[in-house]
Length: 135
Image 1: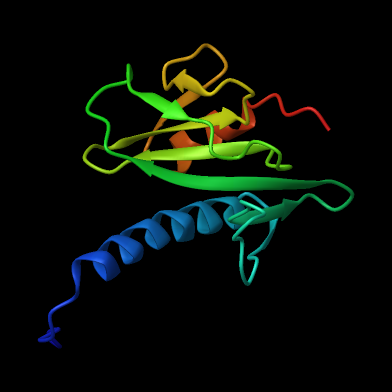
Image 2: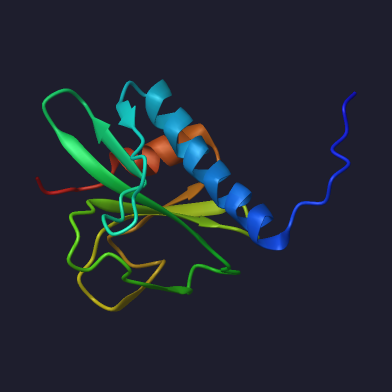
């Protein structure tokens, strides 16, 4: 079995982990029948994924948080953008949250408009389908 023998730098390792969460969302959405588009560069547009059901398109931002419980506050990092929803993954646990983009500066993960999921396809898709995104 091959073994990686080179050391991965700390910043690179974190980027790999963050990107792996985006890849999970891509996989789960594709398995659900969505077309998924990956921007070459999302800097300034704050769109990690663009998804479509055919006639409609939605912008998704994927974030990781170092949260130990659902009382964790998240900051609004997409003001002045067109993001429709944000998918949060708890880095140190096995849960996540699907949330509509909000206008406040901060909001708790356990806000009533947010849908908590376990980090697996079935739970994520259930939470995602409960989203009430206005188009």
